[in-house]
Amino acid sequence: MNSTRARLSSLGTSQTAIITIICLGVFSTALDQTVVVAALPTVMLELEIPLTDLDTASWIITGYLVSYTVAMPLAGRLSDVYGRVRMFQIALLIFAVGSLLVALAPNFTWIVTARVIQAVGGGATVPIGLAMAVAAVNPKQRGVTLGLVAASAEAGSVLGPLYGGALIEWVGWRFIFWLDIPQSLLLIALMAILRNQANPQARMDYVGAITVGAALTAIAIALSQRAIFSFDSILPYAILGLGVVLVIAVIFFERRTVQPLFASFLYKSRAFVSANVTQFMVGVSLVIALVAVPLMANTVMEKEDWESALHLVRLTAAIPPGAIVGGYILRWTGVIPVTVTGLAFIGIGLLFMSGWGTEVEEFRLTAPLVLSGLGFGLVLPPISVTALSAAPSHYWGAAASLVTAARMVGMALGLSALSAWGIERFYSLTADVTIGASFEETQAPLLEAGVTVFQNLFMIAGFVSLLAILPALLMKVADVEETERQAGESSDAAPTW
Image (cartoon, rainbow, N blue to C red):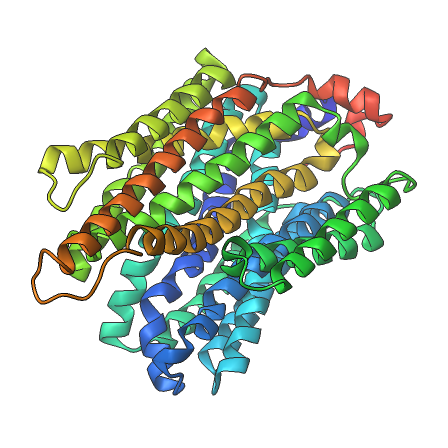
């Protein structure tokens, strides 16, 4: 690591600029994960997509999330091989091209395809940005640095709907995506001040990357189908089975590859595996909270749309500060105390939410939302630090892509479970309700069933978060230099970027 540190010390005062550029890049692409949520009704109206095709139209969002997840492993490893500065710039360029195509979209097929292209670039920025951030600072600063990058990504997701709603009101939904183009080009130009350094000793495992991409695509699509929990169709299980077969094929193939996409020391590392399992479970809890909070407010609590959004903002706005605080205190506490505290905050907050009814006083509403949000933020830096510590520097991109994808897959599973199980639970609770003339005979039982479903969802999410403490207790910051020696590679050969 001596040569790497020497190169970093020569950069000195430019560290702040480097981290700022990374954070801006991650923030700008994260906006587009959620910005389209506000634009979807307007897009459907302009492209003449009927409300009855809402499930189909949701692929404007789902297609982005699936591609966003699939792009991560490929982009992460490419950055390890060809240099992180160059690959970050290419990712931003792809994102800009996708944004241009979305802005020009004349129909539904076009816009979904364009969103997929846009997501390939957007998904690539996250693991590359994390790897660049780790390389830019010394080990003691990694926690707070990763916290800043994570906070930037979360802030983009939080502000996406508000940003999109404002632009739609003022200039129309297409302008959201027109603005992505100058933002991306400016960041590409700013990154030109950084020296790209490829690793000539590294090789890209393209067969493994294609197989992993296909496996993640199949699994993500299968988990996004509501029928996977309602057992209405065999199709999701067939797609999921294909994904599992591809995963087995990846394992078989990677064991015989000299420089595999995911080296064996990653999944043999207790630190890496425990971090990914914890991250997966956090993703399950997070998506349930993100969907159930505003949905409960809008339905059984009978709040206006803007009030429902404000409920959710109390949670999401606390995530970026939690990520910064979590990263900052890592140097004194270590990864386990911060992660366990964050998971406890999430679990306690969600379990308090499971006691909500149709009317909730202000403190009982706000306190658990803020507590859970802080918890979701607190766990981000220690999970990332743990996962990246298990990999040598020339595999940081690949490691960052896996730990980020773990949360996305967890969110896909959680969303599928929420929609399918929640609907089935509601039907079972209202099976004996008959249409009557009075409120007590009809609306009251339906309202009570709705409250029960949301309470059950919050309780499940809370227990999943608390259960995640078990793998979190196995997390530790691995000895990177020892990992590099085990991998048979010299740390001095690792590229700065």
